[in-house]
Length: 397
Image 1: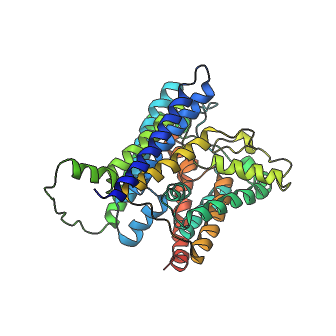
Image 2: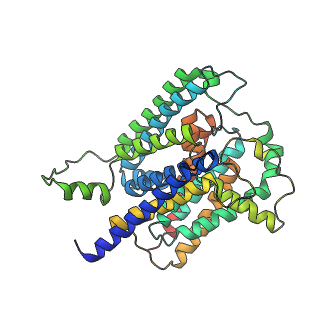
Image 3: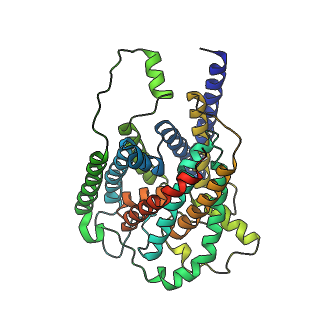
């Protein structure tokens, strides 16, 4: 093994060890439940970051691969992640809330209001994904890979959140305040919701396979041993089944021990704090803090559970990219900057207005049985389709 590869791998391993030690120190803090939650959030974020980076798990990229290249692997990974999480959440919520009584909702689950504002916000988010080239969670793991677009997309997302705070009150007063919060087990029961969700995901999987290219034969090589295993784990893209199972399992485990997965609470809180400090935040954000979703607050402490989750995601993806030889930073070009800022602005506004993104509303929402998650999925897909022509113009070439 070449010295450069050894140094790169050693640095990646050191980053992962440092994250593990920090998570362990926080989790093992005696008598401090808040610090234990921080440690678990960091650990879940690190696991999520490794899975995203190794499997190239991105809502936009995987969908674009199916549409433009007729490659279904990424979409099948997404659908499997949704299916595994739906089952996991059903087990957790069913144990906590055996009877889905009409007046009760599962604790902390991302079950948001269903309205035209949600559909518009999800459409804007899908459009922003297409323009910037990734969803927010993918920009975070690609930040760890040295992406030239990711920093500008995340900066644009912060600005988009600030814009969302400015438009929240009119939307809330005219549309969102009267919108129903629909939890499917209230109407279908747990068994009915599980069956309907899995059936819908199976239908989407069948459509993805129908869209895919005709199957081709894959050469099977006889290479075995530790070197082949190491290449499969640390360098090659993980199979769709592994990615889907891992993401779904992390989502269910996170909900059981800490809270639903989401990546925008910390970003939104930074935007809310900055807007408040600059005096541009509305004096009152009507009803915002009463809804379920990726909650934003004016930051009072440096560390938060979602902040450490994001830190773990970026740090672990950086370590994973180093080991795989996929940390490839380059100087941003004009198109990188324009695409990142414009797409991030759309995603930030959409995520703020929808109370989350493809992870918080779509993934965690569908897992919890929220109709809002399915509405976000459909509207974001339409926005993605509308944005693909713009992407072709803005993509660096």
